[in-house]
Amino acid sequence: MHGVTLKDVNSVLCLGAHADDIEIGCGGSLLQMIDANPHLHVHWYVFSGDSKRKQEAISSAERFVSGAQKTTITTFDFRDSFFPDQWSQIKTCVADIANNIKPDLIFTHRHNDRHQDHRVMSELTWCAFRNHLILEYEIPKYEGDLGNPNWYMPISKRYCGKKITNLLDCFESQLDKPWFDAELFRSLMRLRGSECNSSSRYAEAFHCRKATLDFLP
Image (cartoon, rainbow, N blue to C red):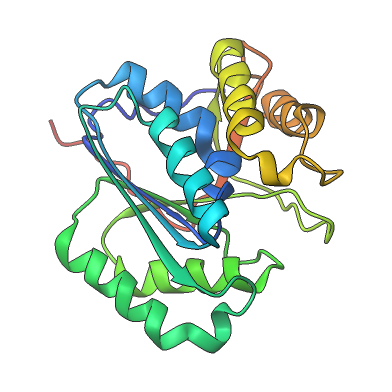
């Protein structure tokens, strides 16, 4: 499959409702982009989590962005699973981020995700960022809401393995959940790799509502 290059991306904003969302949704893409673009500035925001989950989120984020030239890692204290009730407060936080950051690329949750917190994050991303390339990542879950993505990032076997290792090493609190394992993470990337005919056999997939194709030099 023919694609476009992201070599001109200098700043990336990652938004996650919960600890581990960003890593599951776009961790392989970030690892690969950072190695390909060492000048990258990564802004990483996690909006919920108790003290243990927040520490896991920070430790994991530090692993994933360790090769970037500049990083910003921020966590908030919004109540997990109750984002609709905290809509205005979260909107204020996202608006503040938008006032201070002008990223070239944004990773956020998918608008049609069945988790209420994920939907709120997606909605508020689009409210605050109206002139940006936004890629909505996917999170496998019990609800079975995986859709039909239209944007793929082929992931090498190296970064596929690194993503999985980081997830299992950093999120000890999730290891007792039957869905949180290497087999699921690898299987989803293998499926998306097949869909886009990735040479490595692996890929991460995203939903892109709109994008421009610029022919100017």
